[in-house]
Length: 272
View 1 (cartoon, helix red, strand yellow):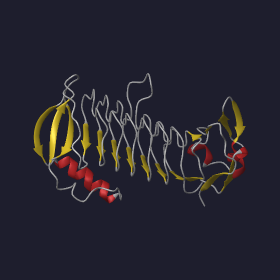
View 2: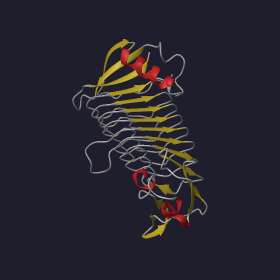
View 3: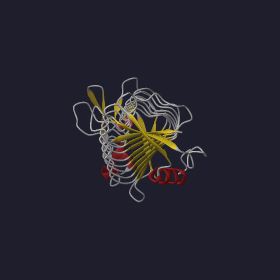
View 4: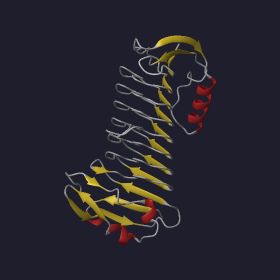
């Protein structure tokens, strides 16, 4: 039985649970996990004050969070191995600075999902907030590896300053997708916001929905083609059960180079 952490007392003040780490809990009993201190406002309290804990992560390196965790921050921070399942909505900074393993969410996620991700996979079967895979304020690089897959919608500044990796959004996204990208791939299958790819140096922002987005004047049309790498990505996403539109695989795409306010080596892809 996996380690199951179920919320029994909601808190109006956010609970920061970055002390509940897989490398620690897989050697602890349920009682020891329940006694672990978490941050609530300016005080530290035992996890058991708000959550009940059953099972163990000793054998399968699996952790399950149950209930409405909208006010719970930093689940899966720095995860290096194992699996985390969140059955419900969850708060900010899920999987921040994660390096390996897998996180699955059956609900919606707050802001800063996978911020500065370094590896592993995050799959959200709902919507996500702003700053997905982004760099923290004052930093230099956003996510440097790994995958963030969101079945629903996403917010603003997705992939801000990302260096490598893949972000895929099945629904619509907010403004400034791929802003300041250094490299990597951002794929959006729904309606995009404005100013996509602003300040990008390299990498790919794929706006693969049916609607033709507005392209910044600092991008130049290059050609229309069927990129081989994009077909590989789409087949891979389909194998993972991601909602890829049926016509996306064989469609042609306009390619725009930019942002020429930077290196101009990035590309925007839009459905032809």
